[in-house]
Amino acid sequence: MKDHSIKLSILRALAQGGFHSGEELGEKLGVSRAAISKHIKGIQSWGVDIYRVQGKGYQLAQPMQLLDEHVLSKQFDRLVELIPVIDSTNQYLLNKVDSLECGAVCLAEYQSAGRGRRGREWVSPFGANLYMSMFWRLDAGMAAAMGLSLVVGVAVVEALEELGMHGVKLKWPNDLYYQDRKLAGILVEMSGQAGGAASLVIGMGMNLMMPERVDGITQPWASLNEVARPHNLDRNQLAITLIKTLHQALSDYELKGMQGFVERWNRLDNFLGRPIKLIIGPREISGLCRGINEQGAVLLETERGIESFIGGEISLRGRS
Ligand code: ATP
Ligand code: BTN
Image 1: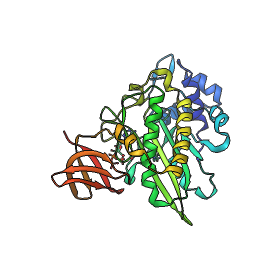
Image 2 (image 1 turned 120 degrees about the horizontal axis):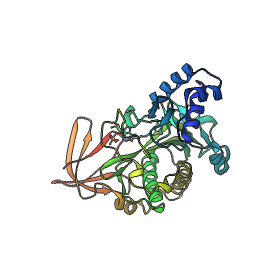
Image 3 (image 1 turned 180 degrees about the vertical axis):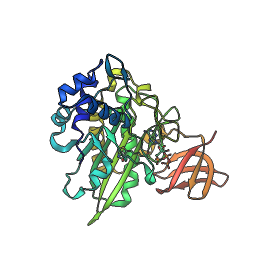
Image 4 (image 1 turned 45 degrees about the horizontal axis):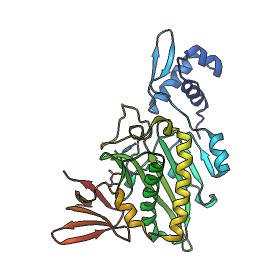
């Protein structure tokens, strides 16, 4: 793995606020001013907005709170691993499922190859959002994975509500929406089956303090700082809460499956009663969204009545 220690030390200094000159940073880290300037460019390529004022030095355009390994390990010991710069937290866990404890988590500050469904890019600027993945061994096997990904979304929205953050909704199968814009995405990936059990990696990317200027997102997006009071946006506390929420939701799902779940989903469905279309390969079907059924399928009302649709290849879109 590439050594990012100088860049991370620069970021720790800048995250304390104020201006830091190239000279000061260079002295502290034992490198030249020219090297600092090069590292700053590298940090900017991670999506961090840094500016320089002649005679003063470098400053972050927005305050940044870094994830803290000590705070996390106090809660979870070695179950949670923080790797600040990574390709993809999902890929990292998928690469080593055989050695993982159920519930193991990987968190990152920046992903160079964060991904969404069907290989789409998940834009992951440094230090602004949450990127986390959890490993889970599901005894019920692969067929139960669809339900599990719906359950995770509901549990996360309910946890946000408990923190006083209201108005976050769900788009089937597993996106979080705020005011019709995408706030977070959940990606469940599988690494085959051993016996009956499925090895799953459940990844979530949630925008917290997205920079104003961000390239590469191809649809309207939202960020949790639009929803929350600033004191609720402690990134470490939020990461801890969401990890606990996921642990709980996955254990509950193993015991109870989808029992009692349809009402919880439908209360939070962003499109309930609204016109939508389902895109299934080359086919598009329009109708009214009627929530989900006990199998986790999305329900669509058309002139033919109410029909259910399920499967990883389906995309839901709103229609105005
Ligand atoms: P689907 O219904 O098929 O899942 P989707 O548009 O939600 O459709 P995904 O593959 O789930 O697609 O997610 C990738 C989408 O999310 C892309 O449109 C991408 O531009 C967008 N995206 C990428 N990064 C972010 C981000 N940080 N915040 C919000 N949206 C993002
Ligand atoms: C989607 O909406 O398609 C799902 C997006 C999932 C993004 C998260 S970020 C953490 C984890 N690592 C990845 O590469 N993807 C998921």
